[in-house]
Length: 150
Image (cartoon, rainbow, N blue to C red; front, side):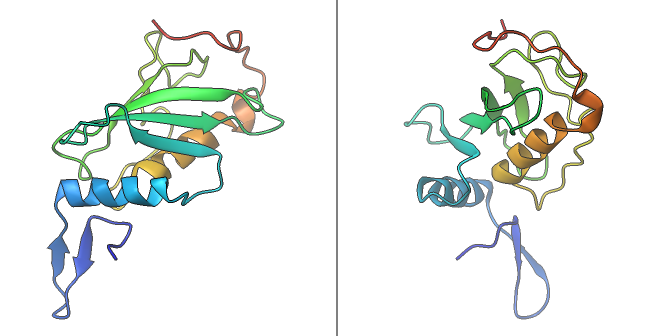
């Protein structure tokens, strides 16, 4: 089994890089087998996407937060530099947070998410979910549920 990061240590101690597609296929397989607590889901946006670029994702809003039990839809784009570079994050559900611009694009730096190549889609979605439930955002007014970014 492949580890959750993009490299393995060989018996000689050097890092062995796992090809991007193997990494993404491993993530997809784990998700399809129900590898998390149900607060997140993700899969290929297009089932025949052999390059594994566009991912349809869902985050269930944390209880007792401004996004309490909302279903948040977003798209991740994993370019050829993944996992060395983070996926681009585009919110489909319209939300009001300082790290999401008016078109729905997420700025990971503003969300205080420091990407590293040992992260994966699931860990990024978890960090986004945690960013949205921070105390400093509890008073932000959110768009009506069911509103989508244009």
